[in-house]
Length: 518
Image 1: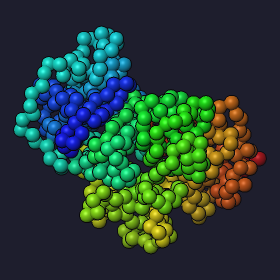
Image 2: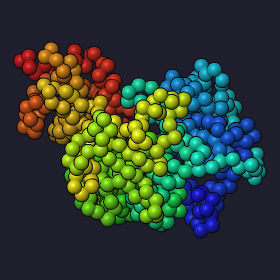
Image 3: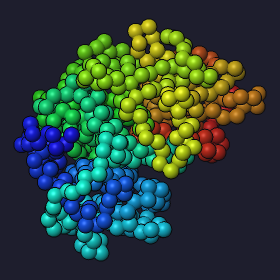
Image 4: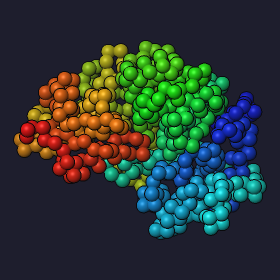
């Protein structure tokens, strides 16, 4: 797919990064040279190479070069420490690592405890490279020259990337995706966002995340468009970057959109070209601020997981149902069915509109499985349907609506209460930055509700304030018994609250105020 762009867009910008531009033709030279460098290091079909870095063009070149060899990229969160890096790269059994200069020492420390020590090269030359023991850089490797790739062994079914889950239930799992999956997901994103060759996709999400790789990069490739790559998300510089790079489309997550909405309006830059934004969930306030204050006309909400990229979305032409996950995603070719979606009960029977059950999905972009975990792979499917673990329902127009994670349900006095609903309602309190509701054992059996609350900077909120807010906005059964005011909440690498860590933290309940005991 990448090489096919050369036939129609060789001189078009493919990647823009920190003021430097790479055309499709120039990128192809880097990919060929990177493939040759990997072959000199003995990389062959099926091998894994780790990436430990913030976003950088070499990550894109490396993904394509490894695909050329039938090998696999295993990216890791650059914020991980040595122990976390060691776990993932040991689990992936990487033969080598491409790493950012400032993370070199951590990478060496991580590798020191691995049974088979991988080679390490830096992805760029900087002043810190001299302090890295004379370690080679990818640029050095490329300058040694390239040679045509021979005996190309890859196919559409060849695994090309491991996406490690956020580990919300324990150790991260490696989701395996094929080259065909990435191509099809990119084509689906063309339909989802009506991408055109002139589009410039701003990538602020990290290239270890399915969104950045399958939607931003995959979408740019499928459309023959331009990927505007940023090292990391910067809220204070976001609008300046949007204006300077002439970005027309951006993908966000809820946390990033929320941060931008709360930044000083003096940071907003008028006259930008941003027309489209993809992400979820977007509430009414998100639509209002981005459309009316930030002049971004089209917001598209969707739903996907590392295992099933791009399963649902609000149709680009509309109608857009705010807070809805949308309808089953479509492919630009009507003959290609991108997703079948249903709501299932615990026995596997599909439910009619309006009834809540587990969201299940069949899609050609489904993962190949979890690496070295046949048991978890088998447990993720039933009768060919992927089990998302999310409770949802669909309406008579075929739009799907998220209710809660099955594991985020609090069972109180015979009723099921959505932790996600409590998070949203309490998070709307003007003095609350973030909130997370979890179940705690009740002396009456089942659960009581504990909510951990982070106040906004320079603002104060008391447990009693949360109680009053909840009584005004929720039914009595949903009012929490315990409120803990905390400085911060634990998060996964994709900025979701790591509720499993809260549930395991006994100090939270100790620190909480028991509103019932007053």
